[in-house]
Image (tube, rainbow over all chains, first blue to last red; front, top):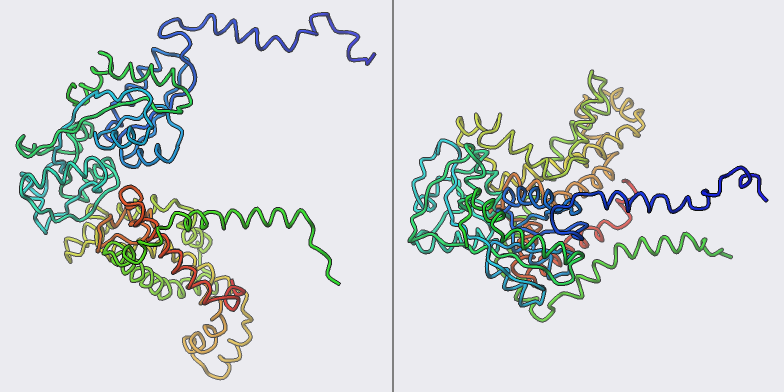
Length: 262
Length: 260
């Protein structure tokens, strides 16, 4: 018999069970609010315009479901759609454009939904103080101003071009930014005189950006929808997250960021 | 009689080679060969190719004009803070290109510390212009030239320069007739690296110069945009970049690579 065995108590044999027992005790004593059994990470691919609203929804959802970690993957809806169709692992997709979500549905990527959870309108963003004196969409045709749009395949770019077409304006664009937040950052920094973003983006920038309202007859309504994805790593948590976003609490958070109720 | 190389080296080497080859195979597999002639003559592709070639060549030229003197100073002159300067020159190599682009925007943008006064005084605005692309490309690519040339200068036998000086040649004449010809292989290799880096630049360009077809949308930016809207065009653009790069590298072959 090796020397190390001799002096030990009998309970030494059960030493490997100790961590498991401790975990079971801790889990049993854990928070009892929220769905029991919803655990793990849930990967949410969300449109860039949802950055701030979903950050707060993440905090609220994790508070209600202590075992869950929400991981936000933000980007333009079109690049997220591509990632999903190419097979990137994700549990939930929240899109700023109906057509992008429809493309994911058509590719067979959606397991539950889509549910429309909000609407958004376009607004002209200008640097604080509106140094170039932009008053409306017609200023987008001014060659002397530095004008930014989102790239044509991003929702805000597609909707923006639609609004300009409605207003009969041929814009003198200086840059097509990859997503709405990149555009907002350049407007905020004063490097662009004006950009076409969403109402919620202007709100989220607070006093750093001013907004110029677009009349309803030219404006375009963006329908935001959310869906559970096929082959997601954590379908239970995905369902819980989607349910939270469309619940009263989720809608209240979205309202507070300027999204219109569905 | 030649011995076979060690098996471990063969296996690891082949794995390394696969890492390079497989993505190209994937690209070729996705190429729409029948539509390729149409795609390659599309405006998006020709605009992007023209912009990429023009801006990368200009960036290489500016890098040579500014970089060779800088490299000479770093290699030959003992001035206080030389190691700091050398670190600064190397910084764009390790800095993420987007960070470089943001820094350029803060300095040379409309509200930038230099860009603001520059615009007030001359009306010249670099962001969202083709010259902005050249500046962004030069920023990320010039360190390659400086480092290559500085290394070559340090390894140079200075006795030839001494001999030329003793025959009465002025310092600039020595530089022009003795030093530069002696480091020519390294200079060319450095220029090619610089050009290649500028040709492939994405992050600093899109952040500083923006993205507009015909004005600032170089090949890498065009691929990025096309990936989301028109997959076939994206593949065609990628093939163009690979083809141009291959042509340059094959043209160099062994002659200049040895100097790196």
